[in-house]
Image 1 (cartoon, helix red, strand yellow):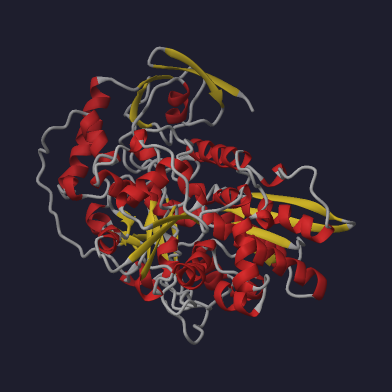
Image 2: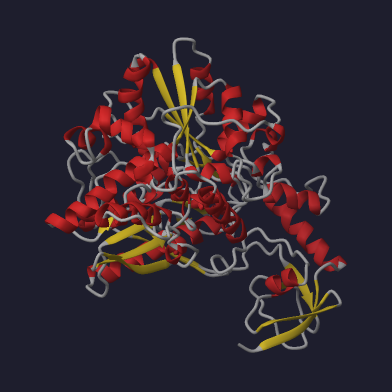
Length: 603
């Protein structure tokens, strides 16, 4: 591609032709602020905060939608530029609630930070603040349109990255809001509750449903035995809210913090990830040997499951019947473990620390009660756990390293890598290959399925049998893969699908910001944690072996099917937003219902 040289604030910069000024400035170490811009996702120039002076241009130009040109001269910090940005932000603030101290995004809000950066100390324009009801119709994501600044980032991510189209601009002019179709709440829409919209929202218009008060109450109840499990991806992200670099492995500090918060036992979801591999790997080998719908598709990502139930119910038989590791853990905790330690499961509270908002929805699905109780009681995101640690006055960065409790805290490196895209596949290959061939693998790092390519494909030799596998992350990539399979264009035996870009390390419950660079740091840390584990294959986990020997019997046994497997429900597709967003115009269509609802649908 041709290169273009221009001058920005006196610096000569050479970038690829077609680069927008905002990215060229970043290459020169100059930060041009914006509230709507997301590279390659939301490039619409709507907020006008990123305006700059371009020599010979008649007006200020929006840097996010103005491509560079040879010899262009750009100034990003002139009096006119500063005055324009300040006026724009004041206008936004004039119609924004002054609730910063009580907002979930307080001290981590792009609008708040920008107002401080621009030196805004008062707002000169009285706005008309008409209060709208807060949408709490889902157990996972809350929508507060009072704080929405119409940047459309959430719309772009939902449409382009996830292809769900659950929300879009409704109305015109000053009456425009971002909402689901038909004026309904998120709970009645096609929303899969992945929380990717939450990650990109610059303010507090979208945030996770907070269950910290319920958990505090359980911790304070002397009659409750409260245990906690932590997902693989939490250990490489929990340090970020406390000033540690992205990708810091903070497993031991997190365990220490959870004990100080008062949890009776601190366990690792990685144990259940190893258990998942035993069940799912056995399911794959059984289908290969005896027949059954192929490809087998992984089932541990709840956003993907709801997406499948809504948009691709025809592949439900291909999806593994295995519950996610979170739900397997809850079922095992309230049966096997409760009996083992002599605790009445009615008094046991299972709390999950997850990188995922959709897990909040998953634990409340009506079929997730095979223990005789709700298997998992509360799900907290990494952000919620960080708030609890801060509320308790715990100095996280200086905590000692502590180990998980036994036996549900024993895990392998295969469980750890569940946190990154390709990790479930790699973990499954490590175990399936050794069980199928009876031979020890010479090399267990299956690097071909790692990285941020949208769809990754490979073949595995099983003693002369070729196993064709594929990995997709982000539901736009999953859609492409599924369409290629249903059309007959592609053929695979085993597929991993993760809802969020990068996998769980990029989940909707992770610290904000979460961008590509941060995802890569967390992924690198996940594989470092795997390399440091004494055991790296799920079938070598001694606690999992004991669970089968003393309780479950064997993978796919009657008891394991009862506790560790589930069923799926076809969901309505009505209310999908089909939105085309351009700088000056937005067209909205509301798709009519295209599917029926099966009996027992809980939506």
